[in-house]
Image (cartoon, rainbow, N blue to C red; front, side, top):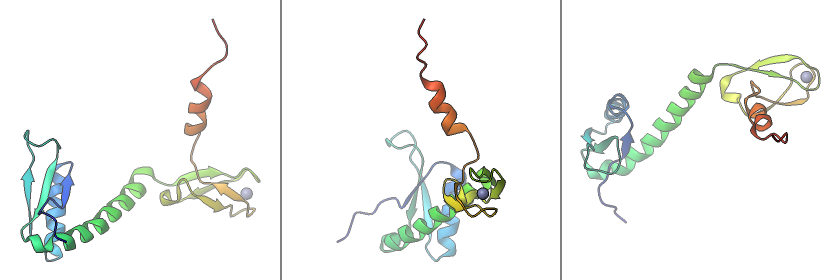
Amino acid sequence: MHRDLEAVYIAETPVIAEVVVLWLGEHGIPAHLIHAGSEGPAQGIQVWVNDPTQAEEAQRLLEEFKAKQQAEETVGGGGPVEATCEECDKVTTFPAKERGSVQHCPHCGAFMDVTDGADEDADLDVGESEEGP
Ligand SMILES: [Zn+2]
């Protein structure tokens, strides 16, 4: 089954597009950019492979690329998470990538949610008030 040749990646910014093209090039897949401009419905910059037969390989590589980027974003963006154990009340710092997961408390061994804050709970409480006018 052959699909029509299509963009293997849509980049949100020129910088990302450049990185993708360079990254594909390093893996032996020459690629180039097509600016969607005002014609296409999608904003963004399309990355096309020069050789259509390499499109599948490029897409596989780009899955890796996206996974790698997401990992970096998570680590870089969030920073370490300080979570408080509900059992022993001690604060433990977890790496950002463990945010939102459940870990063992190193102090008492209890399960604890790795969250750094009150954000989620606060939103729930503030939403509706039963005190009418
Ligand atoms: Zn604990």
